[in-house]
Length: 221
Length: 221
Image 1 (cartoon, rainbow over the protein chains, first blue to last red):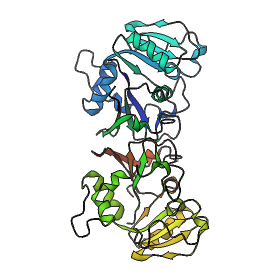
Image 2 (image 1 turned 135 degrees about the vertical axis):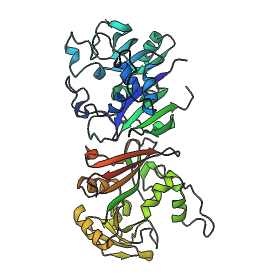
Image 3 (image 1 turned 45 degrees about the vertical axis):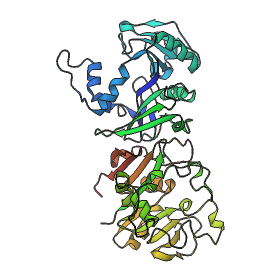
Image 4 (image 1 turned 180 degrees about the horizontal axis):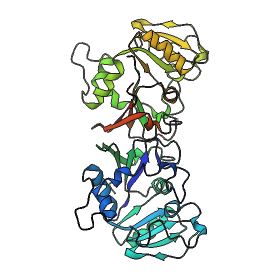
């Protein structure tokens, strides 16, 4: 059965998944890369970035890597928010095609939620961006059909994650709590009071200093 | 050397140390006892409550207990906020003497920060409440002198903890993150951006489901 999953969503101790202000030069604002350094040290990331090039890839293969790896397996589609696809104002730039160059790392149909849709954009490697101005439930129905039985990833950012959680559409969520206090940005928790009623929550701290939080929907989905 | 320490401050995933509204019947508001259930299961708590009465005390002696126990050792004074001493409006009730009955669990001079001080209140077991309308630094100087070389505990609630952290007066803090999303209440993190610059932070998840976070001041104090 096709599941809807969130993986590797990194947050600060105070719950921010991005800092501010977000821009072309600083996609995560004042957070910089600090929320994602744990991931850059994994073997999954080294493979993803193509380092090693035939030689054994570098990177840790421990707890952080075991979690990081699941971001890439079993998915047939991704849904992302407008703020993940580009910096503020990208909708005004017809030439903007995302952050990821000619061969984006999605390799599936990828649905971008925006109030200003544009025609589909086909890239190398199997990624086609579709731009939708629809509700979370409608976007999920469309993405699930495109995924043809595989899982659908909710790729972020935090606003989209909250919207899908609030709508009861997420089966499995993996957050990574990083020991920094950002103080400002976009919080993942707002509006999610009593989320524990719907999910089994497991916490496991890693020797790297981060804590992995997994949320499994209680109805067994 | 006398240190200033915070122990067993329990917070939700979204950073609230208390729910709302706080009242005589519900000191932690809609959070109820949920932030503190981990502690009630420890041997330290069973001893604290006097259960067992000569028989072997019940309660776990694992990770949660190892942390819980440190709340009670090495202190010569406590500082607490007005919201810990009583429910909203206690200042209007001359007969209010705290939540804790004739023998409060502090057993040291205990300094209550309030804009409406009253005369000292001596209770059984070594606890005397002193009511101060002073800054955090002035309160700490007074408490440290009363502690006569032992440590000073900042007993909470979250507003007082933030005030002492912001003023750079805390040497060691222990938070306990409980897997619930409260959604509202009083947050411990507000105004503490970049706290990680001043503290080494360690996270360790417990089999009970909570995650212990310790903050050790980097200057070695």
